[in-house]
Length: 288
Image (cartoon, rainbow, N blue to C red; front, side, top):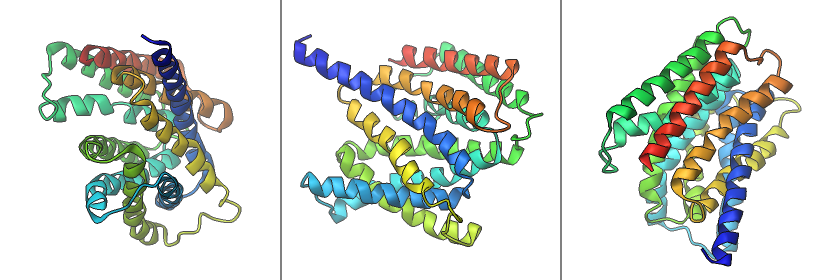
């Protein structure tokens, strides 16, 4: 490895570390904002779309009909995911919402492995079962929490499904679009699909008195995290990136326990989270 390679790798690891931290903080910010999920998702999507489109223009990028066509599927699904996840964290515990979303590698493994030319082994089945069992412990341990809601957990499962589909669609789109191109144009469609959802289910696009400042916070914190993660992909091996992103729910749960009411975690949940993360890390290592 040359000195330049080492410097690039070091910068990439730093970017991933910052990204997973910011995304973990973002889940807690979404909970603390107390803004209805579709409304928060709409403003998060459009705010980020404006920022990334400005970046695209500044870097002499171009928006074309063909590029919009390629970005549309992922953007529409990501908008759906934002609505589901932000609604989930408002209804249930941060631990439940983030740990359920962390099962994404398992869903990809069993439903999309053939598309990626991969074979599912017995070890994959066992580790996936352990990860699911760990999530079961996290959910079971939160039943007595005032912040727990079965409806919120159900929305988190919907967020998991849509996040997984977004991952698959994004993988296809990124074969033709750059990172900033894809993020800027896909987020336009995310905001587009969330507009009627917010109006119909929330009856307004107004976050509420004194809550507008949460919007730039959501664009700046988790939005920057996603951008840093995309930037780091060309500098850090994919397997290592996948492992490090599993730190995000740990950041969310730890921060929520400190700053939010009703978000304390017990021994059963800690054991469940350890089981989930351990199994997922083993899966990622085995696949890479």
